[in-house]
Length: 292
Image 1 (cartoon, one colour):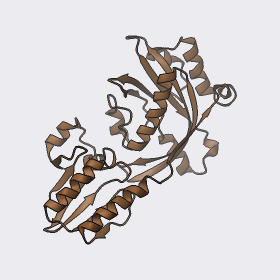
Image 2 (spheres, rainbow, N blue to C red):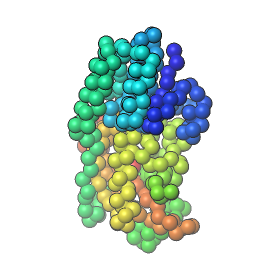
Image 3 (cartoon, helix red, strand yellow):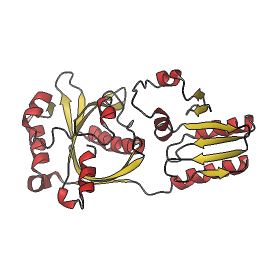
Image 4 (cartoon, rainbow, N blue to C red):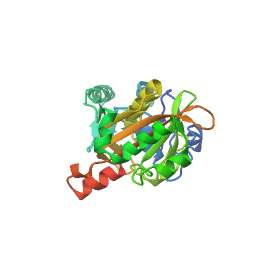
């Protein structure tokens, strides 16, 4: 059965077409491409399962209105009446007997998704508390001050506490977007394959696109103010490759640097956890995987 992808411009693609991967510059082999299109980019997948029936997959939180309009036109043009609708947060697929009810159900799901509380919260903390509560982040802040805010990866590697070395993300503004330029080896929440291929990606294009957009906004504010920022973060992050979500509680410091080579701006984020707050071995494993 052929699956058609309706993108955010209303264009239709064969889900197996190499042209779509090429168009989106996605050449990573070990990667659930279809899930990424639906959950992160807001595309809609339609699989015709009978002459007048089709399965529709979309994510209400991220779906493009243009994609939705395109899929409804597609259903009408192809004479499809009955649909099976599924999305990532739905454990049971919904069988809908008519096109009119399909339209109503999709609208209902999108409206409901917009009323859900945020999965991400952060509380900005005064930098002064680092002196008494967190030796690792305090050392990083001291290095930022001593370096006159000039980024030197070799110097940082020498002075950073071992606990922070794998738990960082470095981003730079490129063509108006904050772009990942380096990621620590401890950034494993999305798996090793994503981490190794993340350099050069816009910051928001993480497997959990909502989280990527949210955290990108915080980094953007640091870029604009040129002031360091310390946050206590609670986030429930979706992992499409594992079909689950993971709750993280961590403290993150973001520092604005001037790049040593080109004089541009770069932002370094590093995070630590208080394991005393964790209730089980599973919780400990969860926070070890959480992002910077």
